[in-house]
Length: 107
Length: 237
Image (cartoon, rainbow over all chains, first blue to last red; front, side, top):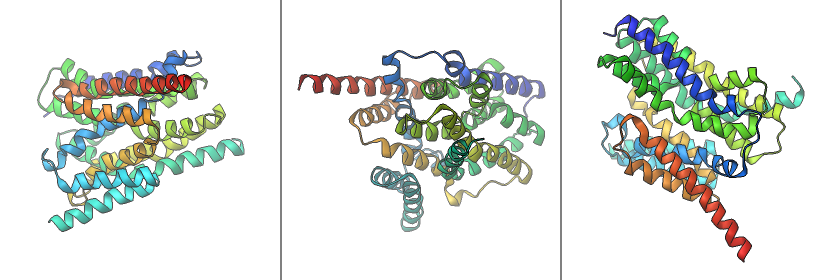
């Protein structure tokens, strides 16, 4: 059981803290123009965060208890290949279709 | 709303809508898990509305169930959200000029999907006017955020998540791979992604999910340095 006062303390403070993280740069630097070196680095935020975010999920999926799963590896590969050559929707469809198919074939 | 703005809003909505595949199962699952942890429906909803960040909500819930001290729960859950400071910074060049009220709202509704989809479009079309960028962003928001609340509620009330046979857990990596893969058309992006993957594995031992922030910072520098290198080489040639 979770204590009620602990729950509310955590929820309110987590809400405030998370908001402050999100607001940070957008709030403080809003209208200021950033130096060129910062702009160059910020161009790579998405491509820097998302691979690191999903790598553990692909290699050690929580759904299999962290055990590497060939079906999920193939699905990730298929999504990547289709994504590079075609588009987002195609990549999602290819990834999930590969997952279902290889789960079915591999049992 | 002007026509151009309305069009940008609709386009954002459309571009972000594939991500409902992630949002629906994930938020339902949170509703179910939080109810199982003994929270009342209004408490589950309060958390989803106040925090609106799935991974950190799951972290906080797990730590509270282990009776960790409040400080530890907060540090653990906030560390998961540190990446959003990077999102916040990356949005500045595009929508930093928006009004304070809009920026407050954009910050509250900043989730992985709205950030990823909108910044991708803003990078591809830097000439898009500010008001259309803001409209586009809120279009993305409209596609995923209301569903976050509704499906948390559905999960909490029904007590039933989408069955694991559908393997929708894997929709999360698949969707992000789908977003990142098309960026692999320039060398600096490829280098950044490679460093990101490698560093995530190498620093996986770090506590509090810090591997993510460290890997992201290294990858950002790697991407920028590759860009500088290519520029220098082009000048010499």
